[in-house]
Structure formats: structure tokens, C-alpha cells
Image 1 (cartoon, rainbow, N blue to C red):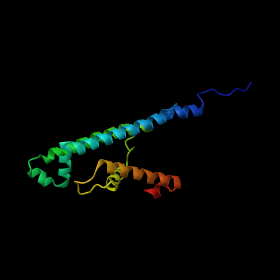
Image 2: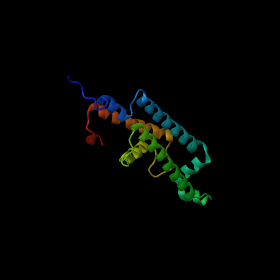
Image 3: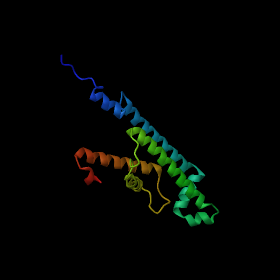
Image 4: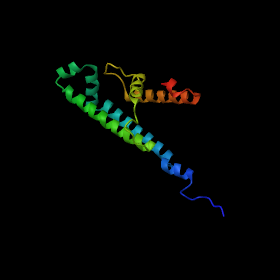
Length: 161
């Protein structure tokens, strides 16, 4: 009597379980990523446009020497900005790993240029002191639409970059 070998579960179930996609998990992960990003944008907008710290950040970016001469510690402001930047990169990495379900040290390699492009397209000045969070969000959305359009048109990833 010939029977089907039962060495393990069916391959389709194994690949779905290995990918971590069971039920509505992919949609839930995408929604969570969207809401975390929206929360971070709202928080950054509030801090940069409605607080004294935000005004000092813009002033330091525009003319560091004038801020220093007015009696503020520009070194402290820059260190605080780097610390906030590091914390937001950590949050982004955790969210990205949770979304993909994979942890790798080279996961976000090459995204630096995308981030700079989104900020410049959004209207920020590379010399500092100008720009907005909403402009950066719109720049990132425009890059996402362009990337998705190139993907749908069948342009190779090598040519698109």
C-alpha cells in the first residue's frame, strides 16, 4: 500500500509559518508601520515648530556663530540633535525589522541617499536653517511613488537607482 510520506508539514504551510505571515499579520504590520511613522512625523513637527528647542535647532543650522554669540550653547544643541537622530534611527530599525521579520546588519544599507534625497526634494537646504517636517514627508512620499512606478513599469532595480 503506497502512502504519502509524512516527514513534516506541507511546504506551503512551512513557508507561510517561516515568513511569519499567518492570518492578517502582514496587513497589521503595515498598519503599525504607518501609524508609527505618522506619530514620529507629528512629534517631529511639534518639537521643531512649537518649542524653543526647535527654534534653536533651526537657528543653529542657519547661523551657528550668531547663536553662539547670543549666549546659547551650540555644542549642546548639536549633540542633542545627534542623540535624537540616533534614537529615531533605532526606532526605524526596530520597526523595519518587525515589518520584514528578519534581522540583518546590512538591512538598511543604501537608504542614506534616499533620506537625503527626500529631505532635499522636500525643500530643505543642504547648508542648513531651512526646511520642514511636512516637506520632508512629501519628499519621501514622492520618492516612494516614483520607486513604485518604476517597479510597476518593469524597470530593473539596477537602472532605477
